[in-house]
Amino acid sequence: MASTKDVKVTLYWLEKSRSQRILWLLEELDIPYNVKTFKRNKDMRAPEDLKKVHPLGKSPVISIESPATSEPIVIAESGMIIEYLCDHFGGDRLVPARYADGKEGLVGGETEEWLRYRYYMHFAEGSLMPFLVYKLVNDTVKNPPGVPFFLKPIPRMIAGQVEEQFINPNLFGTFDFLESQIKTAPGGGPFFSGNKLTAADIMMSFPLIAASMRVPLEGKYPLLAKYVEALQKEEGYKRAVAKIEEIDGKFEASL
Picture 1 (cartoon, rainbow, N blue to C red):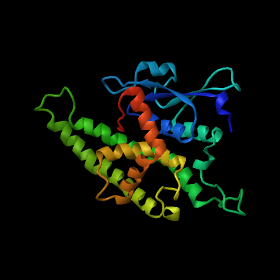
Picture 2 (tube, helix red, strand yellow):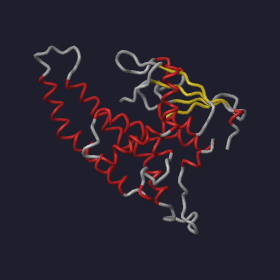
Picture 3 (cartoon, one colour):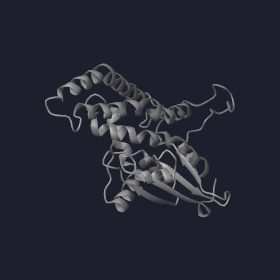
Picture 4 (cartoon, rainbow, N blue to C red):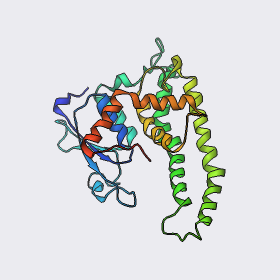
């Protein structure tokens, strides 16, 4: 585990982005850090200045200055950032035990808690986020800016068909699955891997909290709604929100 007093971590935070969950993790692990905030352009794209940090110009990105390197390490992608920080800054308490007693190193010897943890570390971006992004884009197509009002029924009709035949079946099928996963979580939950918060829950926080702003969950998905509510009550999450409110003046969990 790294000595935090010898390491400097900087988070490049973009409004309405995945970077909020990295801020939560930094708070959760009590890692000293700096935040550099960025605003989206009018077209909702990230500013060009972010490309000076990482060639793709996206967020989250962190840089780490360490005595072990002559140049700062720049790390992008939420999953890698979370795993790297957990590896070096005491994140083992956010990762379930991998093997059952007496089955260390054996194929199939993994605990259900660990298998779920590893699964949701990938599920958040691989299975959940694409359909939320599709919905976001499709909602924009329904009411495209700059299109004369007498032409708007055409894109609205097309977007409606895409939503009905492709987006909704996949999105709500995913929510059905998540509801069942919480119901069958080890130890009765309330988190996906059991009764303790894991780094995978932090990974899942952005898409689900943001989704809850657009898709009502309470009626059909009561367990998922309680899960989202529980995440927002976590002290580390509340500290992360307060940090952005202090720096940027406001915080909005949104896609």
